[in-house]
Image 1 (tube, rainbow, N blue to C red):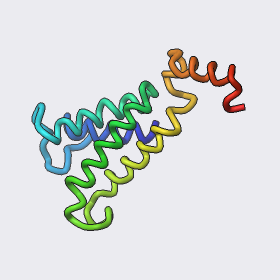
Image 2 (cartoon, helix red, strand yellow; image 1 turned 135 degrees about the horizontal axis):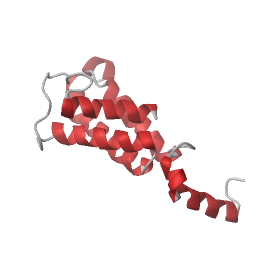
Image 3 (tube, rainbow, N blue to C red; image 1 turned 180 degrees about the horizontal axis):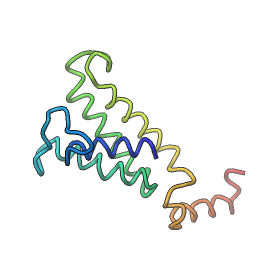
Image 4 (tube, rainbow, N blue to C red; image 1 turned 90 degrees about the vertical axis):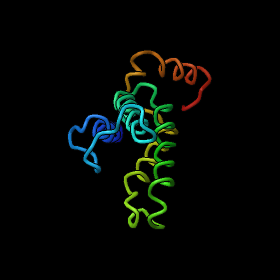
Length: 130
């Protein structure tokens, strides 16, 4: 939930200047490449991850977008993330990739909507996870 919330906040900052304006001081123009699209991925992906709906897919797309952001925007400014201000992109990339593999957790809405429950029930029938 925390990773999703922080990712969501980056998106709201880029798209709506909320809770603070982005580093450039201006929001991304609608449809502008790559800033608006990155903000949209962060906004929607962060919301989905925070709620636990489609977490693995949202985390996969978000992780990829952060890898692109790191190598495209930050890597040219220095070798290490501490040198090139790519700390948050690198951390989001790896945290989101971890969510792809471990899933959303017990509080996810998917679990209560029946999507994850059917997979768990099938696993229990064949003895997986016992």
